[in-house]
View 1 (cartoon, rainbow over the protein chains, first blue to last red):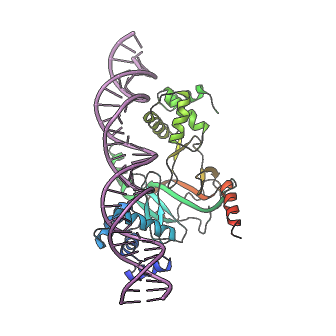
View 2: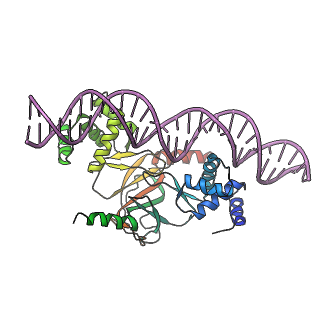
View 3: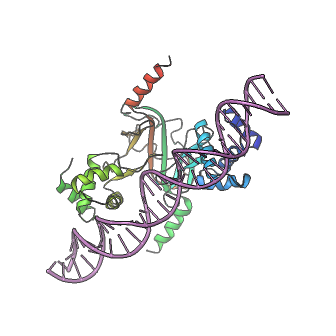
Length: 149
Length: 149
DNA sequence: GCAAACACTTGACTCGTTCAAGAAAACGAG
DNA sequence: CTCGTTTTCTTGAACGAGTCAAGTGTTTGC
């Protein structure tokens, strides 16, 4: 967890103006990985009570474009943000409760990064999403199945 | 491209009632891979002029749950549907125009299907999305860059 | 054919996100 | 430090994909 000063430096380093909302948004994304916009707005309002939701949307866009945060959006989910950028990591999404966890790619350094047939596209990223059940939902599902036995 | 009779059989086989909207939706998804709901509604109305959008939404859901079609939704896109199901194929999405192409996984049979650290999840699917520029947009981008030289 | 179950129509509505216009804040130049 | 320009924030409205709900119509097993 970085300090306010460090967040300000990150913004400057990305050629972004330093504003209270932006610092608070950057901080919130670091503190709450995979949070959706609504949660981030709540968190930001802890620091800056009356920020408009629009300011948060704008900040998130600016931070995403600058590469300071990453936007993820599994199918059927609203947009979520995380501060872990610049590495090759992927996500595991729970089909039941929507919880997201990080996962490094099994085969290491950009393995499934190349499609066998790229259809003429110039590919710059391979995004992997694992779908399944989180530990809690696995347990819950098991006990409800057990009732049938 | 299958016949109407075959689509009806597919529905029966999936324990779904055979209705005109469903046959038309199934046919439309086969005819227009990666089409969004709006396009499918238009296509379906070629066969059944006054279908409600709700009937198409309902049909798509039923077909998806029955495994006759697959729903895909790259980040920032609306839902899209395809009839190619039951194989391990992935998608290449153009960042510029949104076009989607199919791609088989490079390493063959479910290779990057296992995360190195599954965080305790029971994973049942690994979805890969390749991002880049389609041939057309690559060309367009190149010529606009050329103007700067 | 009949009845029960299921699907479709119609129309309203939700909710995440974006648009637009004006007020406020950040920051480089002087 | 102050100014002026540029960018960002506030406010409030709007959009669009998708869902909900009540009632009518169709399909299908018997």
